[in-house]
Image 1 (cartoon, one colour):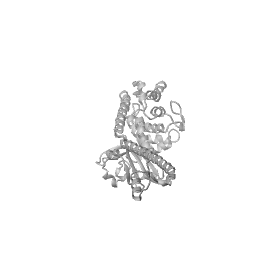
Image 2 (cartoon, helix red, strand yellow; image 1 turned 120 degrees about the vertical axis):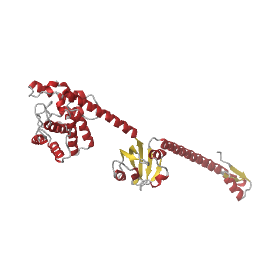
Image 3 (cartoon, helix red, strand yellow; image 1 turned 60 degrees about the vertical axis):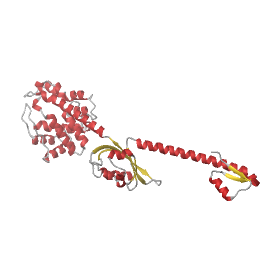
Image 4 (tube, one colour; image 1 turned 180 degrees about the horizontal axis):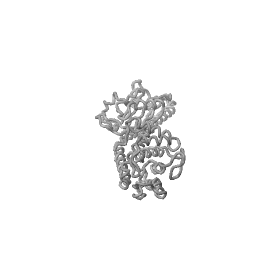
Length: 377
């Protein structure tokens, strides 16, 4: 807008105020025309500043509107908490995701998420945010109506001008469909693995259930050693197919009730390598083929097929070796009757530190000593 300067012979105070209120930039009396250049300069300068300010405010409004659209159309729920963990901002996606209303969030605290699988988890995470660290995690949470939802949560501290904790920013994504798809895939993999393990049992009915029992014992040993659920699940899967390589061994050798010749035993010893060749092309997300390849290796280098020793043998393979030995000795075979659990445990105890990993053996013994583990049928 072009600035206006009023020039008059005389002007009253009320008229001058009214002109300025109506938008005049200034006024100059005719008997003081020498003041006109400076008044014009000042008016032009003020108009320029006003235009710059208006443009800046417009850019700010546009930026805020763009930010609002981004936040409100985001696929993730967004939540901002203050230092007392009270809600200071949320987008509509957040309330829709959890079934809340805006009023519900007045007294909302993270504990109301009701983390199903880890009581106290929110408190621990908040303590870490107060120390300035960020994190991303996946947890099963509860909606307002009590139904569960898998969420991926990115949590970051908001630091104040002094560098201290000023609040918390959380971005929450609904990954329930992804988790359900992963579950279906996992069931499919488990079914495939079980079917592969069944191939050996069809050819060698005398060892029916051997792989399943080894898998359960290996998982129990991993749990006893404190290796976590992931390691136990991995060993359960690996154990179910650890003898798949025996499909390359003639059935009459597998079921022969008498001592094998050296050539026949060499064929038997090829089964870890055959299994590794079969399984190597399959991406399990785990070192399945490598563990199975090593499960007949021994700490002193006397095992097969590569004569590995010590820490060159994967821990999972050392666990599988003990589980395999204990199950095999305690079960019936065509060439001998079952020797029983005690004899099997005595065997691995005797080889602890030389043939078998001593920590693995000790964990195996504890598994049976608790009397809450059995091979079952």
